[in-house]
Amino acid sequence: MIIRNKILALLASPRELFSTLLLCSTMVFAQEEVKDVFKPSDDLKQIVGLTERYGMTPRLKKVHKLSKMLSEEEISYLWDFLNKKHTSDPLDEHSLNPVKNDVAVALLEQEAIVEEYGSKMMEMFNAKDKSGAFRHDIVWRDYCIQFLGQWFTVCFTEDEKLKVIDFIYSSIDSNKGTSIPGSALIAINLNKSQLTAEQKLRLLKTALKVASKPDYGELARMSAFHIAAEHSIRFKSTQPEVMKMLKSCINSKCGACLKMSAIAALGTVGVVDDEVETIIAKYCKSYDIRLRKAAYGAKKKLKL
Image (cartoon, rainbow, N blue to C red; front, side):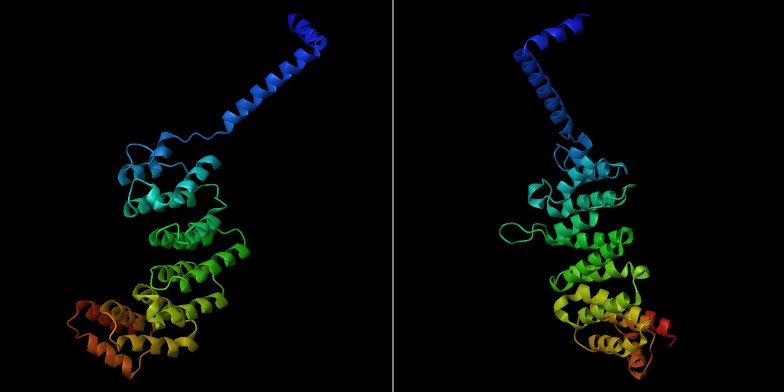
């Protein structure tokens, strides 16, 4: 009865009614506004380096305890951290990247697939500052390519898979001389079981291109040797070109690691001719244990 009388009183006074309604709506809005503000947990704050314990090890321990059912707000908070420049963190890039790596793994392993995962990795790989320089260091950009290779297995549609593969391929020529071309080839090859014959042939031809040109860098060429050799077994018409490329490297003045990789790749191709026999016999007697070991491995595969 008391409440009814108050309502009647308000209705009799429009000005008071308006003021009361305005006050109530303001209070509701304020409550919603507070509710919408995300407050990260202390563990999340530590992961992103906002606590006194910002060392790599304690932060990694918190990452490894992350839930596999993170909220949208928590995921968004972690994306902001991954996109943060290493110069904005108390750790140097060598210590920060392992933390970022494990956070990216945690997001990839969420029970509910993080649908924007691929697009976020692409954005971070290409992100640039106003100066035109890349926002992220080469190691983290390399990680982005590797994670895209892992993301490929959970892509929802064929169109998305094609987008991811094309993006990875585009990183090869634009990053010559870095670790990225090799990581790109490995990322695609990681998903070889899901590639069509046409896509596998594209991978083989790209690997041949990278393997044949020194400006791609030694690490990239080493990866390319093995990928080209592996897929040449299926596409036998390419074997003469692959063999020529491997022999050219072995007979040149290239470094021992590159030469060792090329010798091992000969064993993968599985083709034996007089020149191959000569190469294997020569390097089985090498004073360099790396070359000798590679030659013996190839000899065993080729049954020489």
